Image (tube, rainbow, N blue to C red; front, side, top):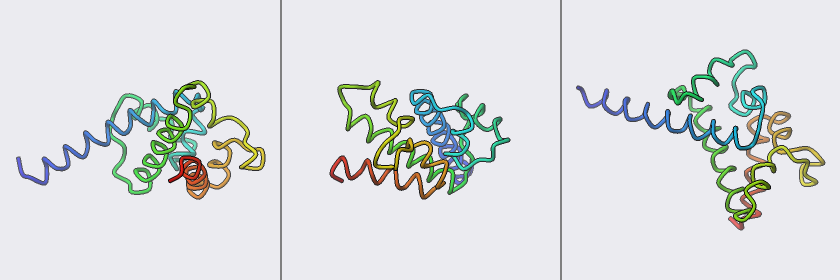
Amino acid sequence: MPQAAVIDQVQGQDRGALARMVSKAFELWQIGSDDQLSMLGLSAGNRAALSRYRRGEPLAASRDLLERVGHILAIHKNLRLIFPQDRDLAYAWMTSRNRAFEGRSPVEVIKDFGFLGMLMVRAYLDRNRGI
């Protein structure tokens, strides 16, 4: 097998692991399919992609998608570190209204502002962790 094909296979396996991780975060946060699609930057009609990702099929090799997934997983990590003793609070935080976001939930911020909203939510959590 040529080396390039081996690298593509490993990268595909990594993208499959990322798909499973982001699907698990969405499940823990109890975020609906429309919000999941929005957070991933996918069209509302692309529910088939969510089904594939839930099964662990590799994420598309899209820079935008992979960056979004990286930020989603960083948000998830931040929440687990900020609320280490209260997983219920950590998981509910994404759908809870927050004064820092003018009464919107972090999911609503991401839905309203797209990728910029995701960066806003992550930056807020990074600041709270002292990063």
